[in-house]
Amino acid sequence: MSRWRGSTGILASTFLILSASQTIAQAQSLTDSSQQEPPQAPAGPPNSPPSPSGAANREAAAAPSDSSAAAPTSEQSGATKSLFYFLVMSGKTQDQFQPLTQGGRAAAYAKGLFSPFHFLTAAGSAAISQWKDVPAAWGQGGEGFGLRFGNYFAKQTVQRTLRWWGEAALHEDNRYFGSGEHGVWRRTKYAVVSSVLARHDDGRQYFSFSQLGSTAGAAFISRLWQPSTNSSAGDGATSFGISMATNAGLNVLREFLPDMLRKAKLAK
Image (tube, rainbow, N blue to C red):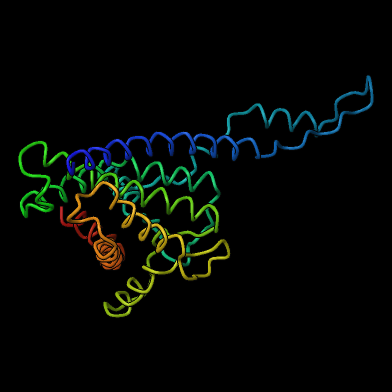
């Protein structure tokens, strides 16, 4: 029975990903369709000769634009970008905050969800649980590892999806922005406090309902496919506490990770 419940976790995870992907496409389509086209210049009187300024404007429009070539390019590698999306990092400091559109939220959600780090962390967590034989009802071997992998992958997927829905509804932004400050203690304090805060479109930080709600939701929803030994409300509350503490710890990593990456690059 416990193995069957564990298998439904994998199926629920797959269904959730497919449903979320469809929602992403719809959200992106709505965002793109809402963009207004540039206004057209009013037509001149019939048979009137084109004005020199109009001709110049047409020539300028026909000429190749250098704006794309002049656009700033990121020096981050593809692996670093994927890691940042998985860790929900902006790669910027708080003074560089720019609000996300709904399409931008959907794109960030998709990139983080399908990041290779999503699979790697689920596999790593499953390996640790396999070594500790938790939960024992799932046994060992390939089947036990598969159930544990499905458990962590499904839980992460549920949490990310719930958080995205909450962010879209409440206009909250849970991306991590570096403090831009100096001093280990000051930066660490900023990182820990930011684990329960989210920015709104005006850039101000408030209590993050989407972060705490999604973490609690994933902790208790994941009890549905856990064996009976791990499916109580107390187990869900414990999972929630561990997840929140882990998020605070990850925020400390997020704060100092860009520094570590820069130093690693210079050391090469």
